[in-house]
Amino acid sequence: MCLIAVVAVTAAGVKQYDELTWQLTREASAYGFYATLVLFGGWAALAHLGYVPWISPLAFVSLLIILQLLTAFIAVGRRGMLMPR
Image (cartoon, rainbow, N blue to C red; front, side, top):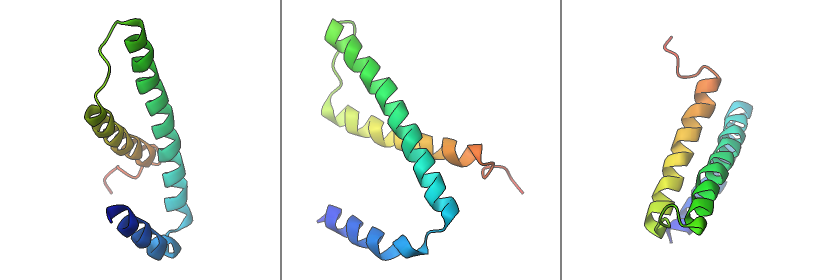
């Protein structure tokens, strides 16, 4: 039900986004993908070799959300939008 609600709200508000919002979303998504690949790919390689324990599914989901939030702040900060006026 939550997924359906999120899709419905996103579809209803998609016409209200401007070009800057779309570009920031794309940049944050790209940074998030790269960070996820490096962090979890490296962790999986080390876990496969036996150097670190495997990540639990709950830790994976929570770290993925934290990475998305962090990369959104990085994308916005690179545009200078975190500077006070």
